[in-house]
Image (cartoon, rainbow, N blue to C red; front, side):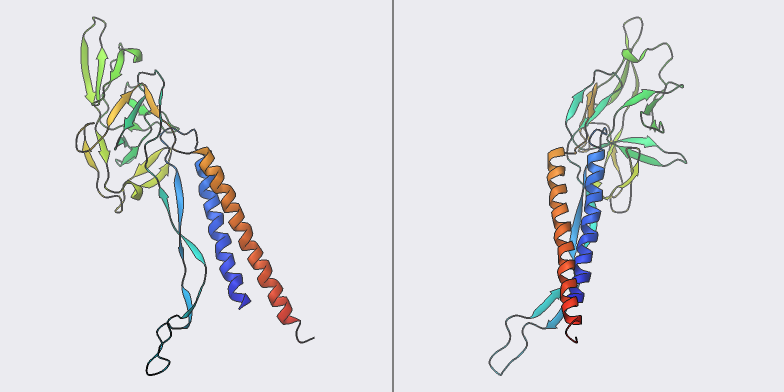
Length: 266
C-alpha cells in the first residue's frame, strides 16, 4: 500500500541525511592533522512477508518464490577508515608522523589514556611534550627537556628515541616514545580534539616502541595529513543528494496514490 511506501521512503531520507552529516564532517576535517575519514554503513529493515516461499500448492508442487516487501533502510553504524594518510615534511623538530600501524599515547585528565595519530607536539612551560591541540594533552611518559636545550636541538628517531644535542656537541637520550595499536582500531571511540579512547570493541592496546610488536616507524619533522579525499567526498555528496531526492519523489508518488484513493468516493 501507499502508506507503506511513505514510511519506507522516509527511512531512506533519514538515512541519507545521516550520510550527508558524515560526509560534511569528512570535508570539514580535510586539513586536520591525523584525521581519519569515516563512512556510513547501511542495512535493510524488516520485511512484510505476504506469502511464504516454498508453500505447498499441491501434492507435487510448491511455490518457488514468496512475496516479501521491505520496510526501508537504517544506518547500521559509522566506520572510521584507518588507512595511511599522506606525509608532509614540515621541518619542525618536534613534528613526527607514524608510518604504519600505531597511535601516540596521550595522558587524559583523571588518569585515562587517549590515542592519536596527530604528531604536532610542542613543549609546554615545564619542558614536556604536549599535543598541539586546543587542550594541550601531555605525551605519556614524556621526558622533561632541560630549559637550556632549544627545540631545534631536539630530534626524534625512527625508533622513537628523543635525543638532545647538548651545547658541547654530545647527544643525550631524554626518553622513549611508546606507541600502541589495536586489533580493531575502528572500534575506538572518537572524543574530538584528535583523540580516541579504547572500548571493548577495539580491544586492549598492544604497546611497544616503534618497529616492534607490529607497530610502524616514526618519520621525524613530518605530519600525517587527513585521509579525506575531496573529490571522492564530493562525488559521494552528489550521489547522496540524488538518492535523497528520489526518496522524496517516492513520498510524493505515494501521496498522489493516497489522494487518488481518497477521491474515489466522490
